[in-house]
Length: 464
Image (cartoon, rainbow, N blue to C red; front, side):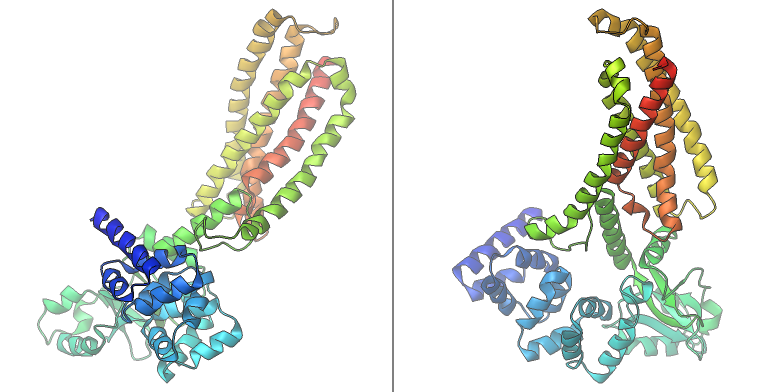
């Protein structure tokens, strides 16, 4: 099956290069719309992209456009004839249509809204009132709804006209006269009960719902945690507004995890939906430069610390041999701690009042790691280092030297573990995404503190 798909995509590219519209139309019918969107993104010129759009069947065109990265959607819509554009906008699922319009300029959004039917325009404007990163901004309204006052026959007759347009009938929601959510029911419950059975008698309670104003990640996590095929989205009065489906949740979590990974790597700016190779060099530059500049300026503090303790290095220059090791150990343990804590936050395992518990847990772990590493390094300094006959002041023995370096390493590891764990918690307390406390930032902070710890400890232990 995969080989057939690969062969079809190869034939598609050949038809585009040859300008063979009839072959292109025939081959496109054998390719999934997501693959067609990927091929559109990879094309080299606007002319080739226009040629592909013109060859696509009007039935698959909305699905292809819904799969395109945000940066390419507007160009694709502009390339369509007014009649095609109207059909595409009306055929798009309401959540996909809103996602597309949210990323357009206000002028272009008004133009496209004017092409919709009155009902679709009113619904779309209502959904646009929700922020694009909320449950309301990602929900679809195409869901099965029936009244609690119906019987099975009436419910089936009510659902039948909207059968093709409904996103899913896996769960059908039961409402009262004010559209408030009262329960849920499965399609098979309607199928295998007598026509006169009241809906009230066979409906089940709704265990979980989410407010339309809630963050989209909260909604997606609920779908995952409770293994729900669809999650009802309600307003403050518990009126059903729409649903978050499983595929919506997967897409949201993919976007959120990508954003967290990029922030953790020290990338800034708007996340690009385009593939790596199709993203412009200047876009990559803008997202990386500010972080690198800020961290470079912060790293100057490390140089300042070294200047302040210049006499310590001059007295025992052998300390320079162990300095990179102590700094790196702090960066590694701090990075590990921050990764574990950020992951726990993402899984909602940590609450606002857990900072002290986290600090105590990571401090004990840091001390344990620090002691074990310190013993190992002390053994190297006392028993292995003398074999190389390094220059050592007469007032300092290898035992004293090993004790000083080992103590500095232990303190650095314990402190770095604590810092790495608490920085994400601090970020969340000031309403920042914990992922902004990225690995490069933690490494730089730990470098500065580690250098200060190292020189302070060895100066004290060695009496320099």
